[in-house]
Image 1 (tube, helix red, strand yellow):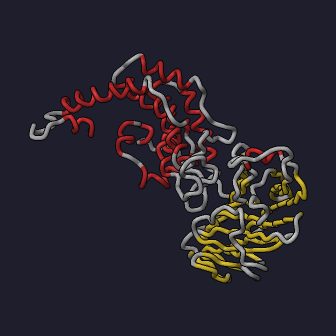
Image 2: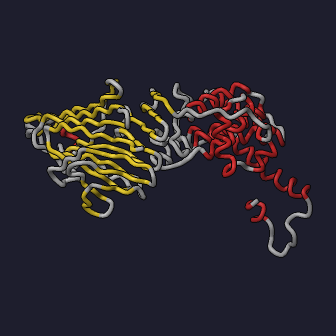
Image 3: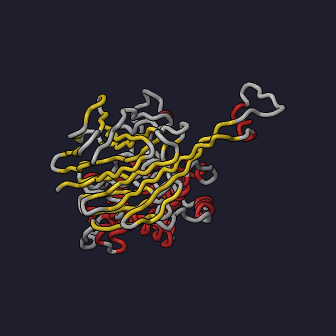
Length: 424
């Protein structure tokens, strides 16, 4: 429409006199767009399927052999879905829904029923990525929704369509929860499945454990308590936890060891009712190079050539266990002695932190006893505390996660256990 307006000279009167004139003007624009989509490239994984959707819609209006030919080329690559039911971008609130919609529309308009299968797998996975209140796990995302609060609203189309098509009551339940805010009239007018009564709603899963092996997370849901443990997937977060509206956005720790001891586990193994995460680090000193000058700017390049001496070592371990009321975290750090470390607990804005000492606005230190996080009637109790020092921004640690922060501190050798308990 904006393109058409640009071509309209001011003072020429009404832009269009009839629906037919509107259709004629749009046809030219859409055919030009179709030509570009039938030959142009893409930037990201989901763009392939969005292009297929657009070409399928165009082909329905203005049949052109270039459109299905291009769809065939993109689909020949195979749909990028893993054993967890996640597309490559793992974007649970943005691009998973975009991909599901694109595959459904392409399946319908190009008569390719096999494209419904990845949508089914992704929607099934979504049911195990829901927090109480409807927010979705975003820690696994590789796109801009990572770590951000978000719901399943963009998934309404796929949930409602596939619920009616397959008679799936769980998808119907979630679609009903989203319908008032996210249903769109053009979709309802075009797709009869969105107008159909649909199946009888069924209860969503609210008591489970599930490991997503490709994304390397372990999900735990116990009613209003929801936790996600991250399993050596390259992330510094150990876990997230919430009890209703009392939300811990992440727990992690770092040691001041050669400026590189932000704990990012390299191994994860099952341990009892939880997981054991570990990382081994070395901090060497370097000897002079023999018979070699080092020019300005060469320091990093020649470092591998230097002989290492006085190598310090640090082993960091985090063990996370499910308990009757939440999670238990045991942090063990040993090797080099008297290395300061800090455990960082990110707390969502708006949640009250009680029982800890304020250090600065939004920053608290749990020196002993317990702290309680409160949001309305929801609460999480954390403790016991430990804080022999106040060096919370240790050298080499990542910047503090946005929001409020509760810290515990210590020195190596360090062995401390913290309970995170949901309160009724």
